[in-house]
Length: 272
Image (cartoon, rainbow, N blue to C red):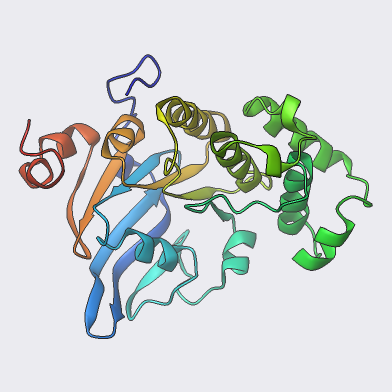
């Protein structure tokens, strides 16, 4: 893959040199007698892209659910800015500055791109609940802050021509970009990305990669990139965690991960 002219890692300084926005500390999750996560610790650091990779069944989605408030761990804690949020709801986490995307874009049929951005902005910045805003999104005039934010996001992701297009008519690649833009509507401090390249072709994946770099550089938001695509993660991330059988089996800079014998054996076929 070529990203930013690419083929080489574009990651910046070592992530542990910056403060953690979200942390998992010794998190364990059980499904019946099966240990899906075993004493997992991970830090999503400010002004950095943190990668999490592993094969199917490694526990990535389970950990993602714990971090985003959708699943309660059997043991361990989740911290946000050093505050324990292990039992916090997804809504509370969103209000605290966390946003997320999904493996399959979760967009609302019958709404335009602009309406998605408006809805996300109002839900995150205002007192209204989802159902009320969803009903009024077309009738309620945007305030100056909302207009400014939508214009910024449209420019950031080159969405001006699609703002008034119904999301039903978008291709998968553009739909994922819209979901990213929606996640940024209220200026979150951390964005969790769940398998964002799933289903994309090479061209769409490169477009996605550029969008993620743009987010990190222009918005300064911390990103957690949960992916099956090892090469994409190695190209983009400052720090990478490798999860297998519910445990972290390696972590480090992308260059270290690429040389790690455990990772080589499991994911690179033993090649250096």
